[in-house]
Image (tube, rainbow, N blue to C red; front, side):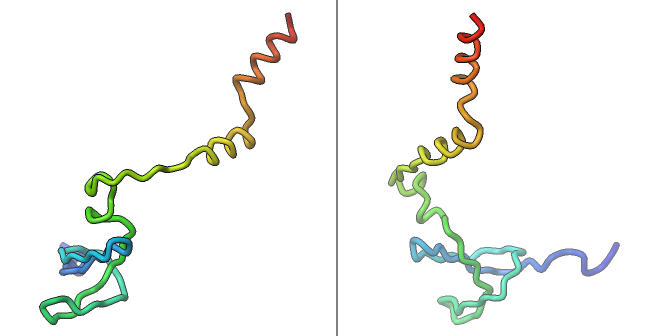
Length: 93
C-alpha cells in the first residue's frame, strides 16, 4: 500500500461564531488557525456558522426566512410561464 495518502486525523476545536460555543472532536479538516483549549493544549481551530448550539431545530427558536424576494427575482428573470401561456391560449380563440 502507498504511504502518506491518508489525511491527518487529529483533535480539532470547532467554534460556533453565533453562539460562542466550542467543542473538541476528531477531524481531518485542514486549517491554519489555532486555539488554546481548556486543558492548556493548542489545537487547530475551525469556525462554523451553525452548530447544535445555534441551529433552530436544536434550540427550538424558529427563524422566519423571507423568500419573497427570491421568488420575485425568479419571476422577473424567467417570467410567469403559466400566466403567459394562458394569455396566448385566449388570444387564439
